[in-house]
Length: 291
Ligand code: MG
Image (cartoon, rainbow, N blue to C red; front, side, top):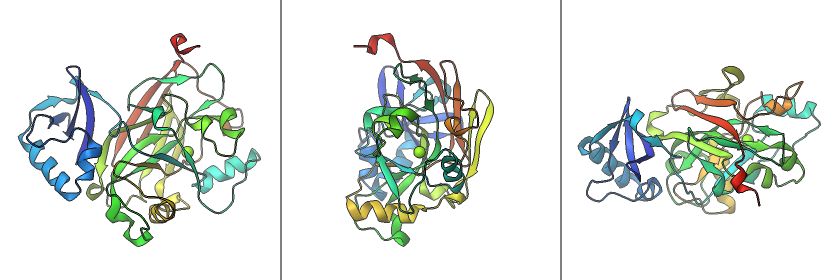
């Protein structure tokens, strides 16, 4: 299933996407208030969704506004340097990483919808993109073995781990530079795990204004999804709806020989085979947000 959160008629609703339509399940008996609450019901929740989607009214996808499928996860984490191709281009710029998993927080307040505008901050001219596979947790868990990770995963989303490079690199935690408002768009929907035969065999591409900038494959991941879930759940409890961005292949604008940072008017598209695409227009940070 493709599970979506969307706006229609002034309300935020949940549903399942089929082709160019969306089944609105919000009015069905027993409907949860969010996808996060649906996932917390486990297999029963997914079974309910299948029944409700078959019974619920359908809307043309073009008539709704898709939101981030999990607009308010408890955690939104990113893994740095998880593709050899990206590490190689970073090393050229003098950025060297160790062999372990390096995680950072993206504050959940940075989440944006799959087609929402994203803000070029007025404090920086180093706004950049990172197309990534996002893993969404489906079950509350701790101390998960790598070989059991599948059992706690709800599905997958397309993430753009947008980054403000000067702010990112001035502190080892990366948190500020990864967390500006609107810099965590993801979606366009959550594709459930059963629909992705192998999450390590997906082509992942990023375009800026139609120019292909990143062209990788999730097969290139250094730390694979099982190891990721094992590592994080060793430290803390993962919750339904938590979003884990698994790293980006080569081709970030800031690491090009002549850096190409994003500017107002640019259109950034990230597409992952078998999941879909998100597309975000860059606009200048609105004046109203100035102090
Ligand atoms: Mg990243």
